[in-house]
Length: 103
Image (tube, rainbow, N blue to C red):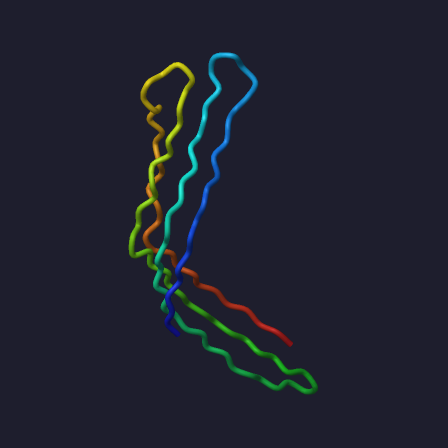
C-alpha cells in the first residue's frame, strides 16, 4: 500500500490578556505538509468450532518530504522586533507497527 498525504495547516492569531506589560500578540501562520505513506497489512482467518478468529499485523511508514515548520512570530507590546520563539524540530519519519484481532 502506498499513498501521498497533502495537508494545509492554518494557525490563527491571538492576543494574550491579563497583564499590562507582558501581553503577547501571536501572528497567524499557514503552511503545507506533503507526506508519503508506505506500508502493508497481513490478515488471515482461523476457524475454531463455531468461532471465526481473524488476527492481523500491520506496518506503515509516514515520511514528511518538507520537514519544516514556519517560525512562530510573537510580538511584545513596546518592542520593535518579534521575540525569538524556539520552534521544535518536526518529525520527518513516523512508524506505525501493530497487531490486532477480531472474532
